Each structure stands twice: as structure tokens, then as C-alpha cells.
Length: 374
Image 1 (cartoon, helix red, strand yellow):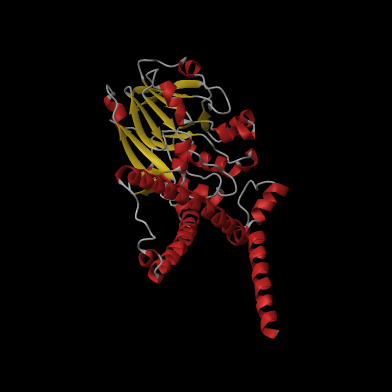
Image 2: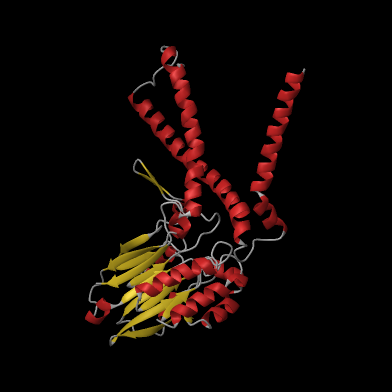
């Protein structure tokens, strides 16, 4: 009877620990439903003991979902190959092969690996991946480019998402990197905030540091419309950035003029390329700032030389496995990240600095692009 009571007690203890873990790991979720998402980072203790464990827990499930997708793809391909080439091996003919203890042990180990891998990847992507800023040097060939413009160094960033996971510390780091690069001009292609204009103060401070050293131009992203776009625009422009909303102007560098234009976001507003190009000289090289890269499908028909975009975050998670390239961003665009060229028009999609959803970056580091024209 004593042995039975001990066993019974252990089972209830285990169940209690599981329930406690589930409640504890989901505290940020309950808080968000009850109060709302915080607009700036919480104190370090709360972030490391409550917020990040929840993020690791939740993003692990996201990665398990992606792994199951990969598994389903391979299973589908295997069945197709079998249907074309013959029957699959029959386990009833070789029971010792399919039911051996070695096989069972292998499957148990594989199962543990399937659980452990997303957990380890999520931990890395949240603790290290999201703050591992990289500088990506890109050369973009432009026909008929004036010699003076071949010397210009353009910095391009996007998707700052100031908020819970992008505070003064994180902003200060990428501001420091851009200062060290010393570009001639900086473009920011939208999503300054994550969800509320209340989180903009640290972002404004960072932009103010940079605008004192170089011209800074930008456009709004879809998240910026959540924070009252007109008020946010006025607030940001006090920090020294020029925001184009279906507008444009000429910019002179070393005696040569280029056109800089920007359009509204195509998801939450109405981009108007005609209005953006109205004030500029069509004989000049034109750079268009458009948060959403899908607008390039329209832009390339109008002969705009170079479009700079963001929005996708490069997918945040990028899994390359056996020749398969899997990223969530594929669900919304074919322009996930990097350089694209169609109809002699170029598009560059920056992978962004911040994150949305879970603060996870896996194989997609936050990016500061340095562009040279050639």
C-alpha cells in the first residue's frame, strides 16, 4: 500500500510540475491578453526569467511545425517515387528487420533529437541570433551611371520594430555600427515601431545621432500605421529624417543629382508612384523607397532604376535542407531577401534589424546593407 501511495504521489507531483511549467511559460501570453504588449523592454530580470523562456518555448513549436512540413514533403516524394518504381518493402516479410531492438532504440533517439533540435535552435536564435548584426556589402550595377555616383556609399536598414525586443541598448548597437561605416547617406524603409508610437523615443534618439552625421531618408511600413501615421511622421521628422509619403526630391552628391522617392505602404495605405515621381527629373538615376517588396511588380513596369525594400525580415527563420529552401516569408512574397533584377530595374530587400512575433532569427541575421553603385 505504501509503495502504491508513493507511486500515486509521484504521478500527481509530475502532473503538478507540468501544469506549473505550462502556466509559467505562458505568463507573457496571459499578460498580453489582460494588459497588452509592453512598448519597451522590461527590466533585465523579467526579460531573462519570464519573457525569453516563453519566447523559446513558443518558437520551438514553430520550428517543430516547420520540421513536420519538411517531413511531409519527403514523405510525399517517397510515396510518389514508390508509386512510379514499384512497391515499398513489406515489413511482414522481414519482421526482425522492422521490429528489432536496435531499430526501436534508433527511433527513440531520433525522437529525442527531433524534440531537442528546435529547442536548441530557438535558444540560439533568441539569445544570439537576433542581436548578431552583420554588415552586408552589395554592389549594384547601373547602366549610364555618372562617375561621381560610383563613389557614393549608401547604408540601408529596415524594420527596426522599436518595442519590447528593440530598446535603447539594441538601437545603440546598430547606431554604433552605422557610425563606424560612415556612409554618405542612410535609407530606412519602414516599420520604425512594433505596435505603438509610445515605443518611438529610443528610435528617435538613434536616428537623431545619425542625422547629425549624414542625410537620412525613409518611408513608412505597415506597422507604422498602427501608431497613427501622421503623428508618427511628424515625431520622427523632428529627429532629422526626411520621410517620403508618395513624394520625392533631388539629392546632389559630388555635383551629380539623384532622385530619392518614397511611397506609402501598399497594405495599410495607397502607394502612388505617379505622385512620388512628379517632382523629380526623369533623366536622373531614381531610387525608390517602398517598404513592401511586392510593389516592385508595378515599379519595374515604370522603369525605376533601384527600389529599396524591407518588410520580410528575410523570413527570420531560414532552413536550407537537402536543396530545399524553407522560410515563412515565402508565403507572402517571392522577393524574400537580397538583390533582384527585372526589366533593367533593380530591387534590394533588406532582412531588417528587428523581429516580429517571436524574437527569433535563425540563419537570417539582422542586416545593415552598404550599397555601392557601379
